[in-house]
Image (cartoon, rainbow, N blue to C red; front, side, top):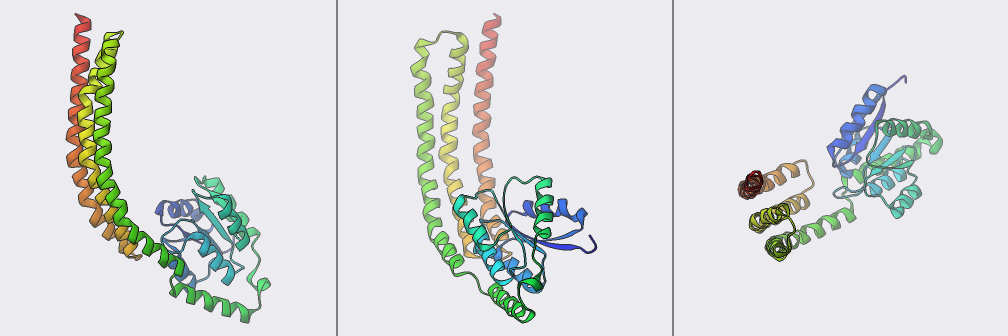
Length: 289
């Protein structure tokens, strides 16, 4: 390969971009990454790329919209769709837009290398697609698209922002009841089976479950409201802004709840483990006697 071929990988999961970079960088490719469609269009406004690889589910404009925009404005640029959530409708829409291939995660290094090489091998040269004048007009249109957020993307962001408080409230209110229900279920099951036990091992197993059940239920009752509040903060922060600072804001909101979860839940996990080990030790001592 005489010159570096430029590949643009668009995915809000940085692991995907790193995977493509790791596999392709030693094969004569220059890999650039973008976290969302708007950033990708801005990258394409500043330079030409030989291949665009995009995920489907991303904040704002999704991967299918991005593929349609790229193929409409730069039909000579091959596009690969990479996703873990594809379906037949999405695949048909991608093919209708002129997408070269629809790849399903997880991706192996061989799949990344082979699909990239095949897409570039079968790509139609830009000059064969449209005259230079028309090409310049389409590039200008792509630049305008990079500067204007998708209307559908804005609608999705607003919907997510409005739904976030209700999602968080459901978790905060519902999960404590789930925890209490689990505690009652474990205790009732252990007590109901006790009279019919056929061995000492079964007795000790259910005694252990009975001892651990209140701690499990209490852990759920105390923990889940914070999970709900953390989700609320995450959804709201992610939907409120789609800039490079979103992750920082989300971490700032999410971090205290993560710490509080560990502080609250781990003592109960430790007490439950203590009860289990103690019960098992008593059983083994009685068996040895």
